[in-house]
Image (cartoon, rainbow, N blue to C red; front, side, top):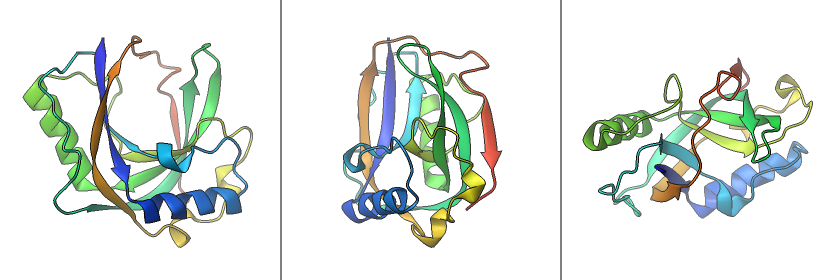
Length: 168
């Protein structure tokens, strides 16, 4: 029904991110072994896409701010997720390359490199959180992976409503 691709981070990056989440007392944090950054989210199957599982040289991305995005779980309950926006031209270039090479689709208005800290941040105001880049000055990306999507992608305006908070 579709293809999902993401990049993974090295151990030190995952450890720094998790320490930030604990220090900031964030609820419902993403487990360190599940931290990732979405590369592609296509409702079209991409049978010829082979992820580059281990980059020859790691990539570096830089946090540029926190954002709150609406997220919808399996029971169609909307929650607020906390994401870190990333500056990484390679991720954008790779996303665009995969879109073009595989005639993929992307259900959102634009591709925004990010990593999710919590899929349900509750009522925490991100402006009260410590600056993320003071604790995690950069993230190291080591490779890609892919997963097959089994559910249709929700492209309703509620599912993609994003409110950017400038707090890096």
